[in-house]
Length: 210
Ligand code: ADP
Ligand code: MG
Image (tube, rainbow, N blue to C red; front, side, top):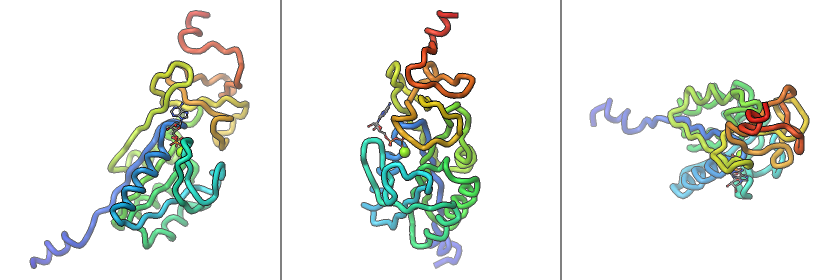
């Protein structure tokens, strides 16, 4: 066989897939779906999540619809590289909670022939880009944006409304702290927060009141 053809046959290109969107948009469900399909195809899979996300389980990623898949907790993205030598498909949930070195780690994993799937919030509760997801979006081969349902009007929602009083960029929680909202019904007040029950007019209501 021709040597260049042999190289083509044996060397496999990896790639990066990003699944991003607001909270409740189905990112974790989609990540689990892809990882399960890879397992059905008898590929070796490995799933990671950051230490900070200990909301439901230390040993699984968990969707809001209670789907689960076994995962390993890591503190720093560099651990993902070290623990993925055997894996062909690597899933990473809550990508936005990692430091920027996640980008280099994903790049190196994909360069070494692996399929890397990263799920994470593309925007924080102020609708600002949530590092390092924008950087991952720019280097990924495949991007999926998932949309939730706006809890106010039922429209497709790509924003996350914080409903508790806290202005840190990272505040881990679910329905107790956050709601899915569309562009029209997402509000960032001066503190960046909208406490539940606060009498703040939203969207068209606000325009009419002014
Ligand atoms: P994400 O990882 O993006 O936060 P999950 O995959 O964990 O989302 O959960 C998605 C599931 O959340 C949906 O299938 C649905 O059962 C549930 N859910 C709860 N509230 C909403 C909402 N406002 N819009 C869409 N899905 C919601
Ligand atoms: Mg999730």
